[in-house]
Length: 475
Image 1 (cartoon, helix red, strand yellow):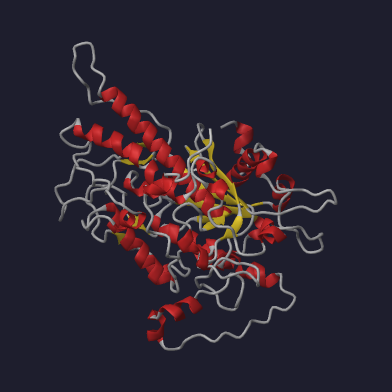
Image 2: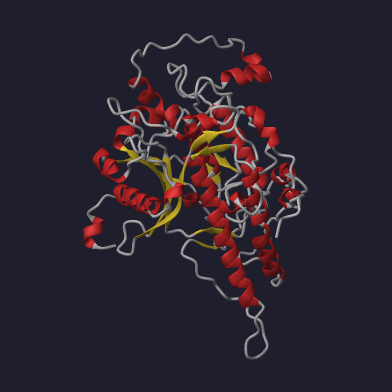
């Protein structure tokens, strides 16, 4: 890091890097600017890895850049069959892309190990002391002293994020939901709260129909704060069960950035969580952000808790816990100079959001022909891509571990489950020390604290046969 660069705040440097990567994309991947000067606006998000933060060797690496503002209505979910994303808001796409990138990193490092291990040296012997070099991930390290353990150690995954890595998320606008409610209020001509009739009998909250009612529309009832909300949408749009980005990011403060698939290969160490969320300064309400994401906010009841509840005695930081991220800001004038597709401010000419265009105003298209495997699926974001993506590193991992009496830290890693459907995959494993079970428990407890979390279910019964195209391709 040069002396001139060190004078620029980290948040500004991260924002500039994300915008530079977005600007480098082809025009077809960007919003449109029309002949009359009007333009589409769209939220954009990027995830950046900071290696060696605040050191002379500090470097920034842009992992993912995404834009989007759509999600599917609840009625369309059962038709997706793993081929269509339910939630295409920029923040959620960025996390999906991040996990796909991380799976490719896992495959690369395990492939490197495999190629070395099975290559004999000049004496015909096979060495097992090779340590692959990756700037982002490594074999999980663990202290040798485990004499005080009260129970067998958790079978954590074999890899972990390098300890000098920190991940930041940059967004061009505040996450929808609770973190932006004060901003919504400030934009109202009449800020009088709406009257809200909510069930007073707590026993009624267990009934599915009434649970649906407790999931508030994205921008409605803004007098109710700190609650789970659905994604905002047009008033004439069919309702969705996709939770707001504020709620999903809050949940990630417990479950980490790792997806279900990635968490089978990468351990949930402290730096597997977001270190910070970066927003334009005029998109930051400190009150809202503290309530949504802060240690003393709506998730305060989770402070100090960890999963599994019994801590390890080996000096490891590998555990699921509530790890609040900091919210940083970038001066508005810097963002204005970098981003021409921002939501128009009061007094500016109205611009179109892509989801407002007439062609998409009716029932959304589900699994269109262009979304067949081999085309749009190449983006790596479609749900079915994550599951098979774990199979390649799994094969490398099994060959590597089979070549040794035990794992490098003395543990036998929890096997990656076999499953016929995605639902079976996510629920596989009866071992309470298995990483998936521990992760599921942490997420369950976090949702209980957030309250009003309604599952967006109906698209879990598909298998890898969705990759088979029943129609013969033309040559």
